[in-house]
Amino acid sequence: NVHKLGYAMESLKNSMKWDQDTYGLEYDLDLYNIVAVNDFNMGAMENKGLNVFNTAYVLANPQTATDGDYQRIEGVIGHEYFHNWTGNRVTCRDWFQLTLKEGLTVFRDQQFSGDAMGSHAVKRIQDVKVLRGRQFAEDAGPMSHPIRPESYISMDNFYTATVYCKGAEVIRMYQTLLTKQGFRKGMDLYFERHDGDAVTCDDFRS
Image (cartoon, rainbow, N blue to C red; front, side, top):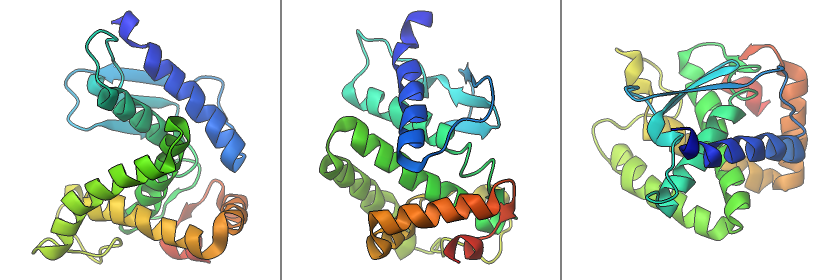
């Protein structure tokens, strides 16, 4: 499958460069490892320095892969890499803060993908279709919950479109209110204050 790895590798390089250019965040280890597994029941997992992926989000055969396949690979590779700062170096105090890790990182991977495809408008349309198709239905039904739930029976139930997608929209609202320049200053302050810490959503807001 080595011949199917080219786009994933380029996506990783682009992710690293984008995070450094956009947020001033460099990778902090000498090695970055990716493992692709056929039978992995999640899209990917951002273990520090060792990301585990379902092969669907790493391997792309140029003869058969669609544009959508390439976009998904780029987005997921970027998402897991961006967790190095928003999830690993600055992590969550407890599970109730999960949207701070996932919502913030979804917002960052949406920014990255918009830059990569050269059209934030097209990327925004794609993201809103996902939001309306999955998250709106969740909000309108019996499984409705805030982006920071107050209780849980099973931790698996926290991995929802609300925590991920609506969480990203809340971050986007911050950027809109603060302007891109103001939001970047806030992000710089967040990393300066909390690098190496386990934090809460309130820490981010402050």
